[in-house]
Length: 632
View 1 (cartoon, helix red, strand yellow):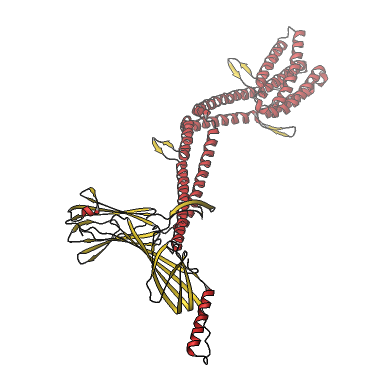
View 2: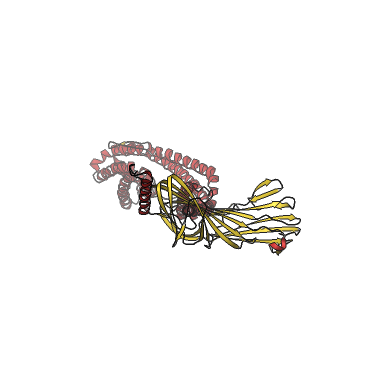
């Protein structure tokens, strides 16, 4: 590092001013000289002479000091490794002063000063050149004048290895740091000159530039040893002679790869990461759907077709049963019409026969009530009315039995008692159901409400008739009671108003039952026609299982219809790897950029081989000359 000594510069200026004053004369006013240093630029060219294999023989540094300023300046150029020095500029007399080279120079605007210095300082690069002839190693001296296939290998080793911790922004946006090992970039350009009349079929090194001058071909091979680099050139030769190899070396980093795409790759990595999250979300949704589908118990679906057949059979049976009930109700309707037709009050015209007639009427009312009670079993709305009739009929039966027992010779009373008992049984069947002959008859439950009101009226009539029977003076009211009973039975058969309430008749019940039977038949036919739609119910569990398996294959991969398919998880894993790989690439690219910046800074900072004056800018270059191969 060369330093400028301002005090020495001022002293030199003062001496120059005194000498000038003495020469001009006392009468002239001395001029005031100002020393000013604006800029010093130190350019070093290092010349190394080597043998043909790269062995160092000598090193000389030519130092060019470019100074801008005014006045006499004392230059101090640090050169601790310099040996003998020699000025290369007239009037410039540098000397050794300890570890420095010093000189006083006078500058008027600018000045250029050169000196050479011998040195034994190690070069930043080592060179090794090997030769072979027809595939066998050979010394350069032995190669001269030979003919055959020649190969020359040039190897350069960069000795300026460094370590540094670099920082950079990772793909995830956080600051990263890493220790890197690098070499100060030194661009080397070996120049191999070949005589085209002696060397032919040349195979130059990759990337070599060729310049032709007459019969001479110069191969320039750019190399950036980091720390090592090599180049090979091969040729066919006759009477080998090779000119000296010259290697130019400059501390510089040639054009480096464009790593600006790291930002776009970082965005792409982030986007792939988001796609991976989206795929994970899809997998969660599919897993959730599969889990929900797996919760459904469809084991009963296999019995759906059989159940539908059973439903059809049940509807057929119900239709048959209701149809039978309608037929039974029609029979009850016919029976009720017979009862109504049998009620004739003219038999009570004879007072002598009044008691028997009243008994018969009471027995008829009892029979009617008994029959109404059997119908109530089918028609629930009519049960109450039949119960009243049955209650009245029970009393008449007791009276008839009592009279029959009292008058055993009276066949009419005997028949009356027996008939009332039979009517009692029929009314029981009509209300509660049972067997009539060989046929089973259900009750009239559906008309219970209507019959209940009617039964109440019959009960009142029956009570009245019982009183009439007990009190002969009141028997005159019996015909009217029977008329009322007849009217009530007509209402029971045909419908009407009882105590202000509208009751449907047994005729309506028959029509309704027939309609129900027809409707059940139609329903059975509809089920039969639709049963084919439910045949697939048996395969529904397997279909659901296949669906769950398909969803699982879509999410996690598997076999669908005999074909192996990747799942969304494969895409998610690939996206994760791609995102991670891109992230790593971004990290490496940014680390590489930080390394390139460090190497460029190191190359820019390598500005001197021996040393620089203080505050000076510097440039250094190396010119290495290797002996050629010749017979001289």
